[in-house]
Amino acid sequence: MKANASSAYPSAPAGAGLNAAVERYYDTTLDLYEDLWGEHVHHGFWDVGERPGSDAERQAATDRLVRELVAFAGLDRLPAGARVLDVGCGIGGPALHLAGPLGCVVEGVTLSAAQAARANEKAAAAGVADRAHFHQRDALANGFPDGSFDAVWALESLMHIADRTAFFAEAMRVLRPGGVLAIGTWSVRDGELNAEEHKVVDQILRHQVMPSFSSLEEHERLAVAAGFTEVAFTDWSANVANSWEPGFAQVRELDNGRSMMRDLARDRGVDVLGFFYAGPLMLKGFATGAVTYGAVRATKPSAATGAAEPAAAAGAAEPAGDRPA
Ligand code: SAH
Image 1: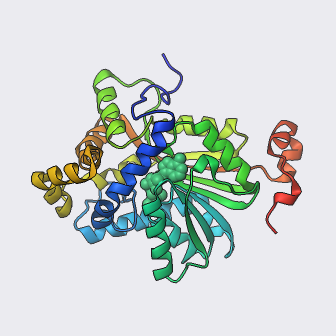
Image 2: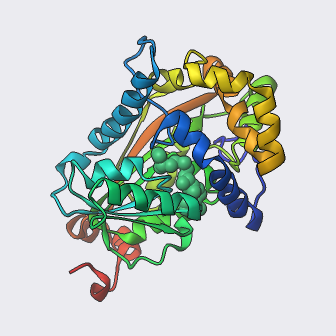
């Protein structure tokens, strides 16, 4: 019996091929996501039991998920001008909220050059180009100095990163003492899945170019192991599962548009079809409880806390010169 489910369901190409596959996936699906989901490449959030009624509601629900994660992680307490690293920024939907209403300075990184360019365009159109900058960079080799962010935000990107231990270490490195990590992620139930559940999860991973899922409990363990304090998670599975309802008219249209899918596969490569397979598989995964979704928050120990815990303090030590002015 495995203690955690994180490494039990590897699927998408591992190693060097993974980032290239993720990059290709988001380059080739950019317009599909934008047409269907708008600027947010992530789930919507509804009250439990609420039924989604229209595409406009879907947009409102994806906006709401951003606000829910902001509130869960306490990012609404950040002062204007606070610096946020957006790990896996997509086309900038969440970052525009952080830079706009919250007044943060956001640096977004994505593997897709097309996404980074589109996000910069959208920041300019929204009048926040001075506070929101997007780059094509690997989250694990992001080039930002130690201690240079007040918050690290990773919304539905962690599933694409195989080495989650390295992700938490990197978040710890770039955060200032007292800085906050906010994660929203697809996940799996902790512990073993049965053969049927395993099959569904494995298909999702393959179609969505994800190497593995971790349970929410595993994210918590990894955050604690990396030296974070005040680590907590919440399970939002019942709030987000509606996102995959075929009741969204456009999704149904696309799903049935077999000739369109054939054309897309011919023009863009067969990987693009993963976009269309996710819906029914995710609904099934949520229905069985094998697939879950949640938010995780964690805080880098402040200097005072670190002093009380010598091991953590040693791990968190940073050259003073690298701190932001
Ligand atoms: N957070 C955005 C986009 C989510 S889609 C939103 O909520 O709208 C997943 C994003 O993660 C994509 O932009 C993809 O390029 C990015 N991503 C995945 N692995 C990454 C990595 N290793 N480094 C940087 N970005 C990564």
